[in-house]
Image 1: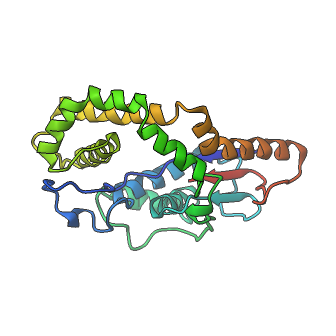
Image 2: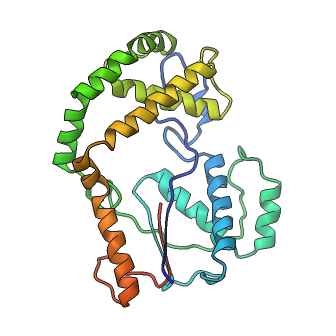
Image 3: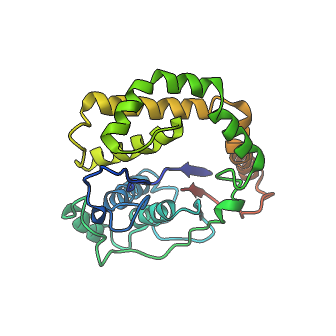
Length: 263
């Protein structure tokens, strides 16, 4: 049997701040975009779930020939992978359960955890064409064209009144649709941690979520952008399944016997 898991990183800090934010930057001690203690805990628990679900497939302790872990070159995805492995391969399940039962999701990382070091592989973002677009001139060109497209122009006009109000609330200048996306992400992260500004009521938050949802729809509405963004990963996945079936390896990363994770 061959198993591949692809998961996102856990909860993270905002990637930008806006001028009127009342959130103390020290609330995010590791800085912008970094995995939070809650995000670490989410992945420990996901690892526990995967351990229980695939207990008959995976050895109880790490076996190099059995597992390959690949991560994009972001600190939050690397930390998510390591956190997940704490839950997947605990040296003592009872001790881990005991620690987690008394751990608050906003606590700092426990000083002592039943954990064993397991390698996580990555490559620089600029050359990662498996899990991203790397430094792809064509993708950047398409992204620039998208920003100037009629579709994005119509979206900007649709939300212009809301954007004008958002500028007043946040003190940020919104010249492009992408400017609003960064603010929307920050405010929604603040809401997750009960740090919402007074103006961010339920209707405002719903509008911000809609803006983000529409942006993802537009980004992945282009067949060529899709091909560049996920084509290599889809091709690699197809090869992995074929290799697993035929018992051979024809790709740069050695094929694990059973379990391949992408973070």
